[in-house]
Amino acid sequence: ITSETAARRCLREVLGAFRGCVTERREVLLEPYLRGWRGLIRFLHSLGAVFSFISRDAEAKVQLMEGYCRGERRERYVSLQAMVQYELASGVVDPHKRSGRADSGCRTVLRLHRALCWLQLFLEGLRTAGEDSRPSAICTDSYNASLAAFHPWVIRKAATVAFCALPPRGAFLEAMNVGSAEDAVAVLGEALPYIRDVYGITQELFAEHRLLDLP
Ligand code: 1Q0
Image (cartoon, rainbow, N blue to C red; front, side, top):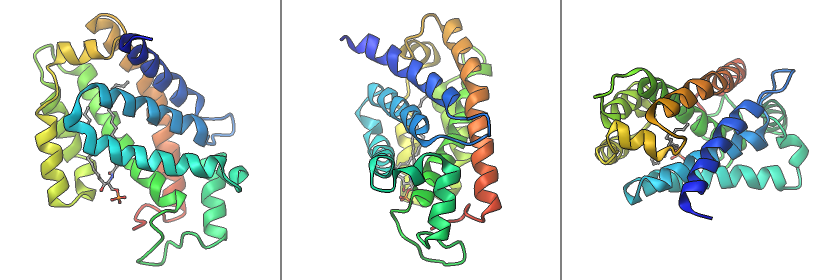
């Protein structure tokens, strides 16, 4: 298949996945959550090699979580709620300890969750900013307002440099491959409420269990 259909498919996947994440009981299902991330990572790939230090990290985290979802304890990793309950009860994570396991599901999802906050701000900015706004500037602002607080100086520096390589608005929206710029903006508007919902539920869950600062 051509890279164009692949890009189109992966954005469809992102949309569908985040939409399919939340159950009637307001649980966040891990499998579609990770599928959404896979789609985002694939899109990031299509933007060029400057972003590979970012996609590599995201990829490693998604892979780790996919391992849990397919592993021996897969029924404990069906939803974020089940995962939190299991990892707390079994001592895999402990909110009162200053050190912790680097491979727990909770601390790994927390990293993705924080990145989802950036994504929300970025997509909202992209959607609402004027035609001559620059994605690189929107991305830098969204990053500084969210994820940057959790990153050391070197990473902030590298990220800021990479953002400069983002294409201008028209080309960026075109890279989304969902039609015209207006179509792309419409797609973003459609996707955002679902992403916001997933973010909100996760934030509440992690706050309730004091997991928002897991090392
Ligand atoms: C479009 C431009 C993409 C810009 C991505 C912004 C995020 C920058 C993050 C830079 C971090 C990179 C390297 C590693 C950091 C880790 O130290 C950190 C913490 O983990 P740990 O294990 O050390 O405690 N990791 C993270 O914070 C996770 C970062 C994940 C970033 C995932 C970004 C995925 C981007 C997707 C592009 C979406 C574009 C929108 C398309 C429209 C979709 C409808």
